Length: 497
Image 1 (cartoon, one colour):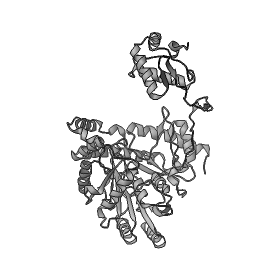
Image 2: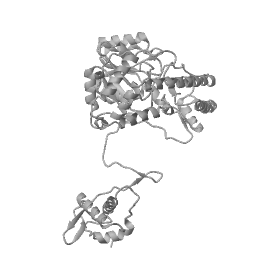
Image 3: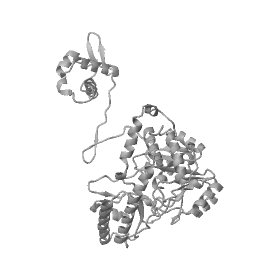
Image 4: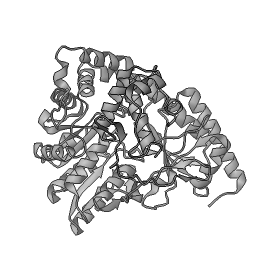
């Protein structure tokens, strides 16, 4: 007889019912060919005694196996492994250089090398540079969780738990329309708003509606790399223009318009990504006039409007758009914490309707409970209070970070103190390379990251975007200390260009 007692192990502390555990183990024995087709199984009484379980557990197991087709019951003869089970041809396991099993795919699929990014493996004791993200430790988790719990405890909350609008929660859309009209000079209704899972979804949906193969979209010579990747997925042509202290060079855009038909211009007007400069008022008006004259869309990604340290924020292009050319994209992810995937796309009602149809293919709807939470978070003034609080913190960190960079690296780095945002655009003396800096920094447990992605146009600017908002004062001193040791060794190593 097959050694059932030693081959089957049941865990009475497991939440899974015993008959389900028993069924699953029988299935594995059959798949592994330890129980062959036509094998007769023990009677329910016999097996219950062997395994020290109630007979009803074995009966329930056999019934489950029959329902799934693994066994068959023959009257007056017993229960047998199904004789007609097809043989499962199992591929031999493959192993890597360390002897670990590697998963293999049993079918072909398409890969896109343009989307591959090499994120550094997290190591103990390392500090990781980023391109400007908020400090999760400052997230008002208690306020948000209190609102979330209150919403979930409402008597009729079940009505929010089924399929709902493709546009996102209507209450949030109305509250956002009111909030943005007051704070950013917009003039929109909730019907102009589509709730998204962050800015990136807004960029993706816009590209799907605007771009086809060989269409032209204008972007900066330096630009948000994820936007570049998104536009390239549409097989569009990227027409790059220079970026200076006043933002995108609009005169160059006008020259392109005279020669080619362009579908859109992508702009991070408030703090150009990655250089942090602000698009000047004169260039904003010029760009809006060009959009009207040549009938192209402006995708305005206003990813960090809320963070300004030297003056009040300049109103977005969308606030001056009288002709329906601007698609305005933003989110609360940067402001509160990246984990809260709540963003918005604002445009003409016609465009928003079509974007919602496109969104349905990849994301039937958003998270209604989270959206209701942020509707109250905004409406109650909690968002504004959070912004005021972190603004003071981030300004202090910007000032400390900038001062230490200037004190320690005058002959190595050049930069402008950013007027807002959460990062510094840092240019390395051209006799040094970020490749060498990145390699040597590893010795001091400092991860520079993907320095290559900041120069997709191969202009050779030798700059990267370095975030400061994530680190408190003590951490900034430690980061600068590690960077100081790194640059000292870079100088002494002779690893120049």
